[in-house]
Image 1 (tube, rainbow, N blue to C red):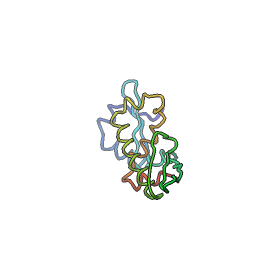
Image 2: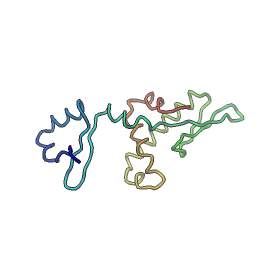
Image 3: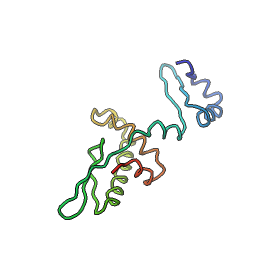
Image 4: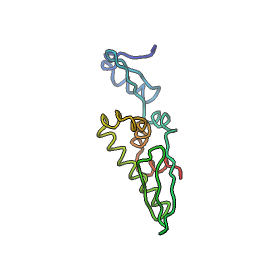
Length: 138
């Protein structure tokens, strides 16, 4: 990769590196044989913008709603109204994302959960539950 910076270059002028990432463009950094990327929050939001959730739900006999989130079908949500359902969905997504991140090695290496990573990062990059709710399409 042509524009890959060496880790020693980044360490020597870390402030300039951060300024470039925040105000100009993402940066690839190489340390030994490993390469990682740094990008701003705004760029991260753009990269992850397509990783949203679809809320599928049904009304129960008692009038309450039960649903699940696609593509993460393990999360089942409940509510008496659509607003309650969305509130529960956002809260459960945040809880799952925090657990995934806290136990990253376990979740990321599980074959049925590896693909959740961009969705998890999108949830974690939101400022609050309202931001998470905007990721859910009912």
